[in-house]
Image 1 (cartoon, rainbow, N blue to C red):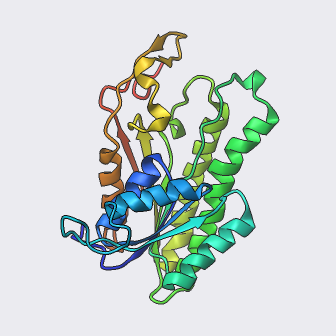
Image 2 (image 1 turned 90 degrees about the horizontal axis):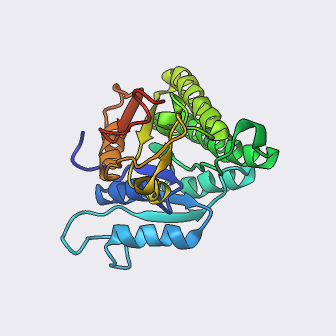
Image 3 (image 1 turned 180 degrees about the vertical axis):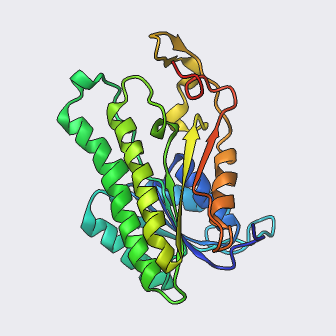
Length: 267
């Protein structure tokens, strides 16, 4: 892994909170130029301020460390025109794209398969699958056509890409689909120097997992507290994947809390 990104360009979707925000801040701290994408400009601006250390402008942090340049772009990954505008903004600002962290996603309300409303199913699939596809497609086109050619796409999957939680049919189906997207991108990207990998995260400490310490429904019907891990562990994994040399790729990586009960031995 290199010591700094030397001005390489990244795009992070879902950059306003959770894993996306943490990864965006870390990339900026390492000198990447980063487009922060999401539906809520106020949370994206908060991420940018965190990366700047409150300085108000991109440049040197209070501690003297190099900082990259942030670009805040309001975007809805489920809308093709919005995705086109997002990638157009990146192209207009920096002229290329070296990394897409395809992170935007939603879990949806827990429900048994017999009770999931169509609208709820569609909402989860639209964001987690269609949104991931649209962003990957736009990134692929940009990386294929730029000079020098190539780049890297990292899809944020989930432990649910392997083993479901109870009452999560839409989310589980969506994350299995993301795995298929990752494999297809990897295959088609070879010709153009585009690497694609996937990180499957289990129980990182974010807003989404804030309730895990109070109890999570298990497959046997019990409700038990689950341990979580610091989100920094996920950040370090993504940075490792992102800054590999072009000839190397992490195809799939699972990062989860060591004592997480609902993956190995789930049920």
